[in-house]
Image (cartoon, rainbow, N blue to C red; front, side, top):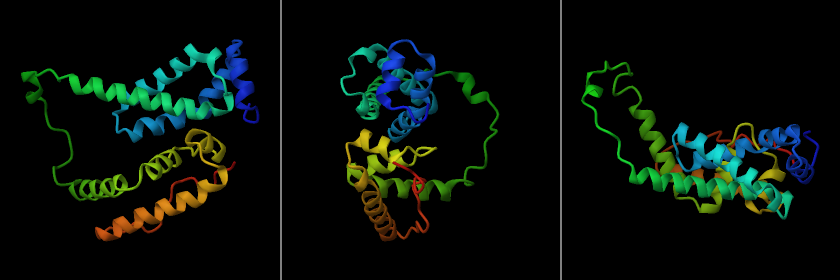
Length: 197
């Protein structure tokens, strides 16, 4: 099914073809996870976003007017679900239980990850200083396994030929921002060097 077009898969799934639906899920689930991770959702919330996005597609199977733009539709729907989840979690307060303080501490010593956390925080600040377009592109390219350039093109509405050069410029900018903070990003890759269109 990997060679079947999105249009054919979508139409077959609409007709109840389970294999076509499974192929769609396999092809685009990593894209949805990268959107959810990009919003820094926890594992459970990110999984809910991915599942809800697939549910929204089931509800709208017959309404997708341009099936080849499905990756963009899925990414947009996932972003909306992420924002809805973030708004909802902002209104929820965790319950306080006294017995939580009686649990034994099984974690690593407090200072064991401090340097790593500090570096990661600085890298995130550099990343957030990038233009939103660069942030979206790099987040999607970091999905594992990496999406094809055709999927990235559809999700971000970018010409396929501009993805590689844009990625290079975004990484160069990220490296420059990191250098300004005294951080080294030598050998930074997006994991998409082997992506195919």
